[in-house]
Amino acid sequence: MRIIIFGMKGVGKSTIARALAKRLDYTYADTDLIIEKQYNKDNNKTKLPFRQIFAKHGRAYFNKLEEKAIQEISKKDNIVISVGGSTLFNKKNYITLKTNSKVKSIFIHLTADKKTLLKRIMRRGIPPFLDDKDPKRSLSTLLKQRVPRYRELSDYMVSTTNKTVSEIISKIISKLPLNN
Image (cartoon, rainbow, N blue to C red; front, side):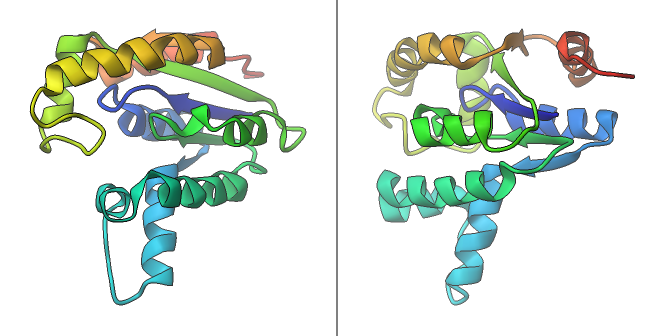
């Protein structure tokens, strides 16, 4: 089984995916980290984290790297994959993850309320996808655009607001068709 964890930045995708993979004894993969590793390998003079790769080169360049990362991990089984907030809006990425092998894919949409999201997102400063003059309004606009699409793409939705990692993992596992 391939479990894809997605949602807005700040919902806890990487933390939850890593913990879920550990609990299930699955491989963990994070597309942002794969992009970062590949970019830094190809550009050995310039080491950048994924946020700076996006800021420096723009969305189109980042999307190409993301497609390559998705292609790389889409054939694997027994894996939990954390994907970026807009990764699945690229139809090619969604279809690749959904159909690229005989492995069943389960799409888990993590959610959090707007106040929680803004607090978590702002911990590291304003990301490039939010308007630095009014990040709260910008986040509201982004949520209105993304949440309906997230719902369409998900097999299950799980809230992370006011929940521990253990509670979230238990909720996700209760939804999975495990043969244990």
